[in-house]
Image (cartoon, rainbow over all chains, first blue to last red; front, top):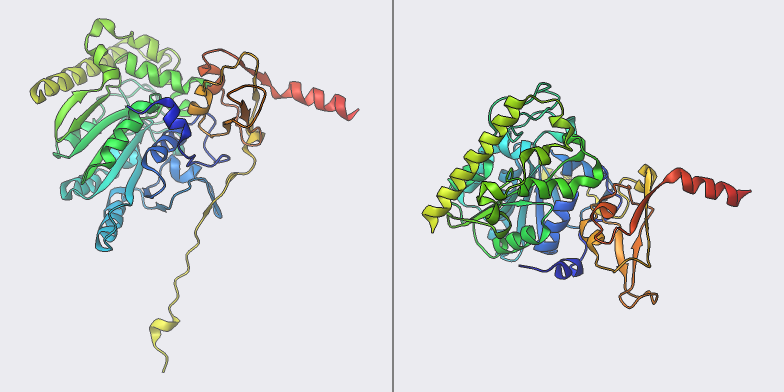
Length: 300
Length: 108
């Protein structure tokens, strides 16, 4: 695993003064991603927070070429870029599709599935703030049970889609989950993905202070609590073999996890949400753990 | 007769990487992070977690063998992540109005 000092000495890919909200973890996530992948990267970004905060013309806060594309088309555009690079005989440039959860889980799902099925050479990162944050926090397919958004004022009913497991079923060379609060883990996973050929998928949990309604300074703290309470499981799958990441390994035992209430305590989106909905969230988490641990056992 | 394709010109407007694409975002700030340089151990956790990023280690500075942590107040939005994550608790978030008072005094 890379060390913190190594991360700090890598060149800074994001330029200060961008339009992201104070305490935004998507800008933090992209900063780590581009630190990990280097300067020879072409990005494809659909409509999402990143297409807004990169800044208006004529300035851009991202120091690599970015193709801003329609909401559903991040993966298809990246397929095109990767095909063009292949035709030109360029094997060094990395293609990074960087999309939010709305553009991956709901609107762009068909395009990702197609690109994954063709096994086009790219790294796809879905950074998830669990809602359509830049349009005013509407419910997305990744919104967890019970969470309040502007379209689910009484709390989200039903279960979210687990995009990382959906991608895992595509039999990809690399699938992983990460969290912006653990940059060393995220950067190590990206650098591992960069060495492989084909479609690599990473699901990055990016706590959003505006959408989740917690104080901006707690962005890192909330992300850590998501992992410590077991709500977000960190794992990676190389050629389909699922393995729990070291950070999540100890939380396999439910007794070692922090209570879910501690994770939800500071989040305004769970304020006043009924016990039954919190219970549904806990049931969903336990179910996710049983799937991941049994798949990890099969892979051993 | 000129070829039609000679008249066809594609123009693209490409943004160029530059600091301050959204202007001086330091104006958004309500609380200003102020580092206590005597307590600071230069662990650079604040640099690691700054989403802007507008904190860096100035290794040229001679006040400490490792250098000095500098915050660029032109762009710092005052989110407070640095103060919250600092293991030494040596960053204080101070209301911008306090600095306004000082500036007014200086003006007088």
